[in-house]
Image (cartoon, rainbow, N blue to C red; front, side, top):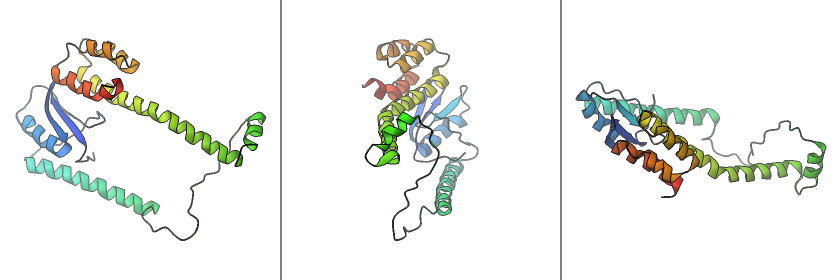
Length: 204
C-alpha cells in the first residue's frame, strides 16, 4: 500500500485514541503501542476514515523508512504519469486544445428545436447546462462524502455499540439532536472523533 506521510490520521487501540496528526507521527506513536502487545485491535484511519496499514516490524527507524519509501514511490508514480500523458510538456504556439470529445446524443425533436434556437447553438447550450448542473450538485456531493466518511468510522469503531443504528439514521437525516442522543453511551474517544467528523454536517 502506498501511503502519504502528510495525510491527517488518527490511531486507536480499542476505543482509546492514542495519536492524531500526520501519518509518520501517528505511525511512530502507534509503534510503541504495537510493541507493547495490545489486547485490543490497533487501527489507524486516514482523513477519509479509510484504514491505513502499517508494517510495525523492526525498529522505529525501520517503520519510518518504509513510510518515507512509500511517499517516494507515490511521488515517482505521479511524475511518470505526467511524462506519459505529456502534461508536463511546454504548451506549443497556437490555439490550445480544448479536449472536446464528440459523442452521440439522443434527444426528442422538441429538445433539438429548443437547443437550436439558443445563443451559440446546441453544443454551447448543452455545455452550459451541464456546467450549471455540476455546480448545483457540488454541495450535495460534498455533503454525501462527509456523511460517508463519518459512517465508515462509526461502522468500524461503534458498529456493536448501543444506538449505532439510530445514530446512522440520524447522520443521514441530518438530525443533530437524535445523532447526539444515540451516541450517549459510546466510549468517549470514539464519540468525540465521530462528532468531529460530523460537525460540519450539523453546522456546529
